[in-house]
Image 1 (cartoon, rainbow, N blue to C red):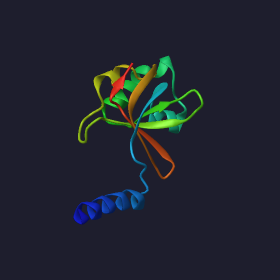
Image 2 (image 1 turned 135 degrees about the vertical axis):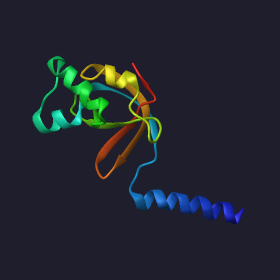
Image 3 (image 1 turned 30 degrees about the horizontal axis):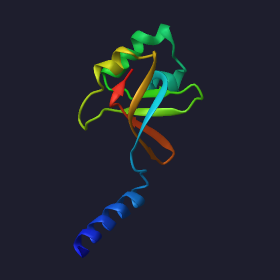
Length: 116
């Protein structure tokens, strides 16, 4: 029993020291943007859709930008996997993403468990 408590405490401490919030499932709506063009040039909207799709296909991070301006960097549901095809085909569209939310050093991340 003591060994189990010690392991649990060590895991909790490692998360606290890493500065990563524990995952919480959430649903967020917003527009999908490619980080490079949106952050560097402000490019977005229907006229930018084909470029955003190309960027997402080559691995440029995808952002979910809410109407209030909050940004989430999307993460695939599994390590070493590309974004789901549903993300790529809906670049620049308004979507609703359900997944686990994480925060680290003031940045927001969201896994893509489902997209509508």
